[in-house]
Image 1 (spheres, one colour):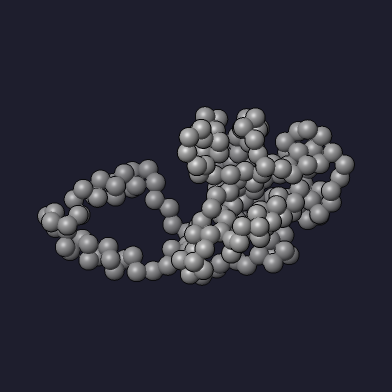
Image 2 (tube, one colour):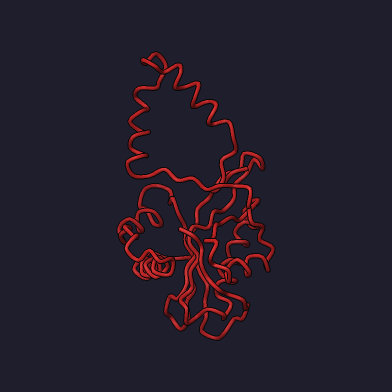
Length: 206
């Protein structure tokens, strides 16, 4: 999903807290994801469940696949940043991909979006990560203006591709027929090699 907000300030009003997400926050986080989907004009697109979020953010026996920060105002969670670690082959190091950034409309303009981004920038600095990346819908001009104001650089030369649903399943099924020694593998592999000779981004990328 795209990152969304219209934050312009950097205030720190009394009763405001930006912190690392905890397991008890999962219902509120999922609620904000639904709010984000409505904002993006896709209110019925969210398929995720609380159990899936718990497994991704707070697994019991394996490393998390995603991480989160939340913004609280007087004990209520009103904003979130959901992110994960990427790797840049050009930098030879890790970075952060910001999957979702969202602040409830009634709390925009109070600096919470900037504060969430600042927390992630601090994570990058503390861990030696080389970049913080995200995407934004082209019609979301308030957010684009904000990202420009903090020094974000639009990657206009890149196209975003996605493979899911039936197309993803079809390609996955082809894995059993394109290995070494399988019928027709030579021509298909050569075509795939030519197609894959490019940089992949986002997320991660260079």
